[in-house]
Structure formats: C-alpha cells, structure tokens
Length: 285
Image: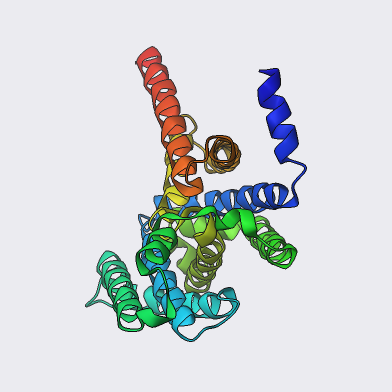
C-alpha cells in the first residue's frame, strides 16, 4: 500500500497528471449535472449524436490542418446542437429520429473524409480509434487548454445553479412551464448548447463513442438510491467525480485507456448503487 501511495505521489509531481485530474473532474461534474435532466426528458442520447458530430468536425479540422481543433469543433457542435433541437421539434421528424439521423450522418461523413484525404493523416486507423474511444492525449494537455476547460466549466456550473429552478420545471412538466410563462424552448436550447460544450471538452478524455456514459451512468446510478431531483443531482455529481478520479488514477497506474477505464468505473459504481436500491426496495416491500 505504501508503494502505491509513493507511486501516486511521484506521478503527481508531473504537471500533466495534475492537469488531467483537473480537466477530468470538471468534465465529469458538468456532464453529470445536466445528465439528470437529459435522462428524465428521455433525450439522453443527444450526447451520443453530438459526439459523432464532433468526430466529423475533428475530421474536417484535421484535413484543413487547423492547429487547435477545439476552436473549430466547438462552434460546429454548438450549431448542430441547435439544429438538432429544432429538427427534433419538427412534427415530421421526432427527437430520437433526429438524433439518429445526425449521429449516423456525421460519423459516416467524418470517416469518409478521413479516408479520402488520408494523406493528411499518417496513421488513419490510430487517429480514428483514439478519437472514438479516447486516448492518452488527456495527459498532454497544455496549460491554455486546462484554463479554457476551467473557464467553460465554471460557466456551465454557474448557469446550472442560477437557472436551477427553471431547469427543474422544464424537466418535469414542460407544458405547464410554458403555460405559466416560462420560455421552455429557450431553456431547452441552452441545455443543448451546454451539452455541446461539455462533449467537445470530453472528447480527449473518453472519446466520442463513450461520452454518453458520462451523462447516463451517474444519473441512473443516483436514481437507484435517491428520489428527489436535488438529491439525485448532487449524488450524480459526486458519483461522476469519484468515478472519473478513480478511472484516471487506475489508467495512469495500470497504463489502460483513460476513457474505457472511467466508463468501467461508472459501470462498477452503477452495479453497486443498483444493489443498494434493490436491497432498499425489498426492505420497504
């Protein structure tokens, strides 16, 4: 045990490890806050759809040799989040169909462009795999990227806290919220844009195919134990941060992929919470 702590202490001397922990915790916290709302609104796979959009944008950024992909990927993903919300409100194209349409289309176009212009990428299969499933690039973050993540995360948290009551109302009864004068469409739009920001930040951490896990697992785990919206949100945030910290530390020590390790920690945590919920239900039955 002492050797384990000594090893961790040694790794913490490197700025890149501290940067990875800071970014991982912030991304996990932000995704879990809005994850509860998305799960309750049955729109949790918006994260999956927008992550595929981000993959397509990364492919275009790579082809155009854009040095900092985030400045291209972020606005593209935000615009697609707005289009996704508008399309989902179309009576001819329902929300789940809109997510599937944009998700599959962006993923296919992104991979097609990478193949057509593969001369711009020396290792096409490696680039695609790391983008889809995450890579160790979380350990190569620059100080500027960390500060950008910190600033965006603070904005997300402040907006969530400030508009908590409105988000709560829109989540549980959107029609009633509209009836009493709440601009539900505006809050739905804000949620979609914030999720787009979180997804772009999380690309380096877990990859585009695993981002939905950061949104879904903490919320579902908390719902197994708690019932009120506030309790579920707080528990989801704590659960997500703990799993992110655990996954990153295990990944650093064992040399496993960061994204997959975090998701494995989320799955293990969900099983624990599901067991606690089952035991509690049997006692009250």
